[in-house]
Each structure stands twice: as C-alpha cells, then as structure tokens.
Image (tube, rainbow, N blue to C red; front, top):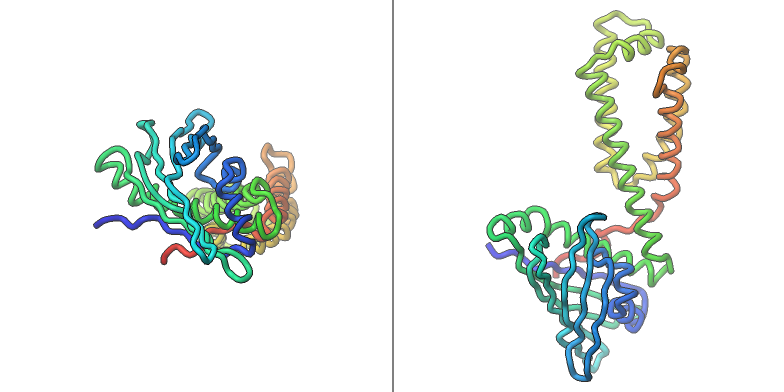
Length: 300
C-alpha cells in the first residue's frame, strides 16, 4: 500500500505577509522548523529557481546536509500564495533520499491558513521503507506539526522559538525521567527485590505482620508503577509536578521518622528527594502552555 504524504495545516492569527516572511526568510525559517538547523540561500539570477542548502544536526557528531530549490511561487487574485519545493540529500546515512512538496498560504478575515504537504523517497531499499513507515515518517510528520505550532505561537504571542523549544523539551524530558524513576523504584526494590531496607523503613512506620508487610510493599510498588505510567499518558503535566512538590517533602520526613540513620547513608532520602523536588519545581515553571503538535490538522 502506498504511503500517504505528510500533510499539516494550522490557523495563524497573523497576516499573510508575516507568515510568508517567517517561512520564506531562511534565517527566520530555521529558527522555528525542527527539520532544519540552518538554511542558506544560494545566489541566483532573475527568473531562476531559488536554490538553497540546509543542515540538520542530529547529534553533535552527525549532521545531515542537503540541497533544495524553490520551483515556483504563485499568487491568486484572492491573495492565496504557494511555494513548491524540491529537496534531497546525497548523504547515504540520511533516511530521506529525495522529495517534493509545497507551502500554501490562504488569507482569512483575521489571519492565515498555513499548510504544507510533502512526500519523499526513503533510503536503504526495503529496510528503509519499513523503517520509514513505522518510525521516521510518523516522527517527521509530528515534528512538522510541532514546528507549525511553534510558528503560530511566535507570530501570535511573540515568544521566540528557542524559548518554546526549551520549555517543550524540558517538560517532556523531565516527564520521561520521572516516569523511569517511579517505575524503576516500584518494580525493582519493592515488587521484585523486596529489599530489606525498604521493609525495615515500612515496618518502622507501620507495625504489621510479615505477610501483610509484604503485601503492603507490593501495593506501594504497584502504585509507584502506575504513577510512572501516568507521567507518560497524562497531558496536564503541571498537575503532576505540583503533586510531587507536595509529595517529596512528605516522603523525606516520613523516611527520616521511620529510619533516622538513613540521613547518614550515601544517596540518602534527604539529598535524593531534594534533587527530585528541585527538578519538579523546574518542571512546574516550564510546563505552562507548551507547544503541541495536536493544534494542527493532519488530514485534509
């Protein structure tokens, strides 16, 4: 079955000239579009397509470089504009070999409908097609939609793309970190390990029989695993950061009451929970109104 081209559409409350300039000026374009680290226009003569080169730094050690050209612009009588692109790269490590697409700008009474559609040929033969279908194609489509929302917020609210991306990656990075921490501490020390130190601290706080103590520890482990999963699926992450700002001080006090000597241990509850409290505070401050790919239409 032939794959569908990537389609992204968004409504921007800004006039068509602002949207056009932000997406056609290479210095402005590379600020908000995740697909490019830099775009450089090459000299051209009148009537020739605008050729350019682009780079995308994937890691500090690997950068994808490619070429492109704008193969036409069109202005209708109603003010609609479009720009068609042909792009590709000769780097054998790139998942994209060559592709074509277009931008379209439709003026509205109070803003602009900005949309793009593009498709490409993947590299690496059959393996590349499978990799593209299940991994790369969804990722680059999501990245395009996220970039469009960053552009929308930049033009509507004035917040620079760099600041938006800092808040976005900080929030989601911390969410993944906390998910790992809760799931790890729920499964290994409690459910699987039944660690003696965990049992000792729990027994100090709740004098229970051995069988009930084991069941309580497993129950707490399950609750921690569920909280870790919640970090991955709950969208209003500021609520979770706020919850942890209240929980970590309480956990620290409870741990010290149950086992006062634990404060003398390396990587003890005081320093560990304080670190998590500070990270939660950072997340609470950065997680307000982060960019999202969900604000875009992904189908016609």
